[in-house]
Image 1 (tube, rainbow, N blue to C red):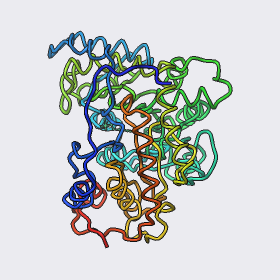
Image 2 (cartoon, rainbow, N blue to C red):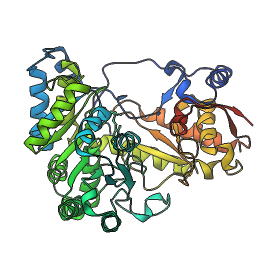
Image 3 (cartoon, protein in one colour):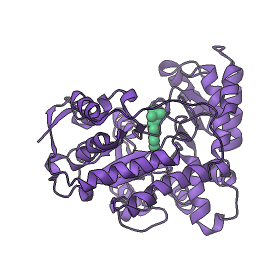
Image 4 (cartoon, rainbow, N blue to C red):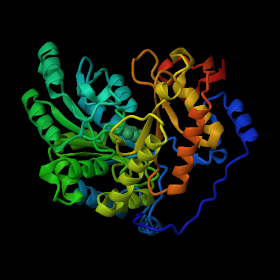
Length: 445
Ligand SMILES: *Cc1c(COP(=O)(O)O)cnc(C)c1O
């Protein structure tokens, strides 16, 4: 059962079907172009879309908006120290700001940077600094049916092979993303974190953790890794991060905030360099592009994120959505990860050929049936790759109730029952194909 009650209500409405069809047409069959008001259940992302607690709102009122030496920064710094075990913190406007700051000082031309799987912005920032971002997931990760408690793990042996090929001196950093967002939100085991530490030592590389969903990851470790079953999640969360040399964090995920992020490091010299770069791109190092009130909210959010009550409600809700979809015969990626359920649209709409975008078609049909917004992460978003054709239904934290998710299940089932045969074709797309899913326009074929 939910470990909180709602004391603020945000009205949402389900538009009539004809209106939804018109919205879809006007949006060019791209749900990024929909007005949020026209969406009933919005599962586009879990990033910055969650509900803050009364304690977070209370902290916001007392936010200190001083340019330098803000008390709210001090509160954030203390929270990062207690919850995550890092003393040196550089605040940024969000996660990608943290990536720009850290990778801008760590990565140079010709470097190679392995990661269990690079998140889009991570990949882009490493490439921007002249580096070559390489994905090293374990073999079963791409298989939506493979069993495995930690399909988010880094394949450390494949990193060793890369190091032999290119030379360890070209690998300045090894990154581990907890949970593995681009791999269906799959968790990473504590054992894999430890192996990655050893690997980084061997290569004389910095060990960076992308900690966006570190709390959700800790809950999986507690439930699935025997050695940690009896420990509080907060302790596990802290231990995971204790092996790293640096963190990049988006407060919009497990910071339980609507904005913000930070870099945290151990090395005083790296700290100085990161602060100098942050001044250029983010802001003075005691606010980094955040309002004081946003830092205050994140300081409280980080502490709430590692409580057992919060995580139980959070992870169970995602898991339950997955169970209900499966019960109704909707094919999904299994096991279900931390922040989202991924529908296997290629199987849900088998009559639509890949060139007619079954994933994007499923997204549009889900909106047509129920005003539900998800996002395609398959052939439309990642042209030229052979990833499975998935649609992500990401759950904002502490936001939707079970009856909303039941509506999502019914809508998905209705899409399948209609046996849609018409797919989509692109009519207009931006020059940069890699970013097309944000803005391309399509039409039915
Ligand atoms: C969201 C995210 C980022 C980037 O954070 P933003 O706050 O969206 O800029 C980086 N890495 C991972 C794994 C993420 O999920």
